[in-house]
Image 1: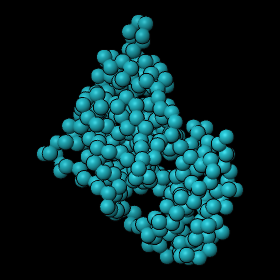
Image 2 (image 1 turned 90 degrees about the horizontal axis):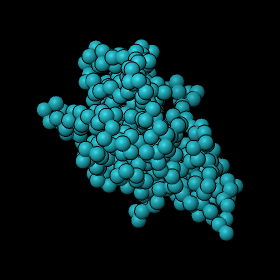
Image 3 (image 1 turned 120 degrees about the horizontal axis):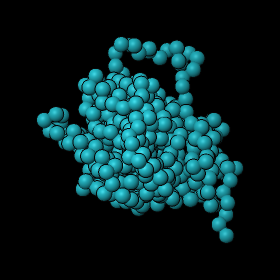
Image 4 (image 1 turned 30 degrees about the vertical axis):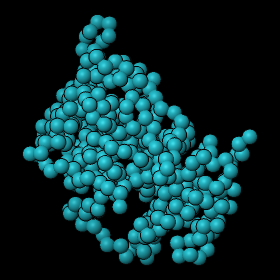
Length: 375
């Protein structure tokens, strides 16, 4: 019978891991976050000074190996994070100029043979961003490209259900995770490591650390394009992802009504602020066609995203209707692009995917995306 691990046993092993300077241990020093334990999967973070994150990578690896020794533990995800500076330390931090755009740090290393990375984002939740991201990844694959899909929405990972995937990733020989795969698209999500009903009560830096590890420690292999389903909104997690991941471009998803477009505008401006190319806007839930009578109803207005794209000077990628078939196939884990490839809505996604690929590979518009290798 497989033993059942508990947090006390994990903590006992972590007490054997010395602190950042070789004194004390990471538990007694208060560096270990709340430990998430579910079905043998262990997730926690270690608080370290941000300027020492690269230097202390071996510490993270030691903690990961220590937790993995507990009988019954099947996988371990350890991230390095940093608390916000307090007191005198905070007062000594230089205040950035409100008018100058933030500096963009060196891109994240660790993704080998991924030619293009595209963020699919929205200024707010509830606009169908994840459904759009999944169908675009599948459409890129249907168009003959090698596609991957990263679920960066840590707080509400929905990609496993949309892609009809269950289980957990396997470890390959080099101790990296092998992405799950369905419909020909390689996929990684925090939803594979944590039960979908478990709340992720994490600070922004913890989220970023987990995301960068899912990029760095996953054996993605050779991909033409990776779609990143970004968290909704324009907070710290979204901004840092936009800064630290070498994006080839970003796609904004919005519904047509004015309130959604206000938030979409914020998303557009965020990517512009960190010098990420805007590949265009998708108007989701653009209109509704009655399946019985064929009458068209513009429930959320219509054409707002196209007008906003023209106003902002970015491409308009297309209109996706509000349709029961899209919703039913997505909820069932059989997205419309693969379950009904001949449907008109599937062709819409393939056309949008083709426009995105053309925008990224237009040598006359911009230079090729940087090639990222493991150091």
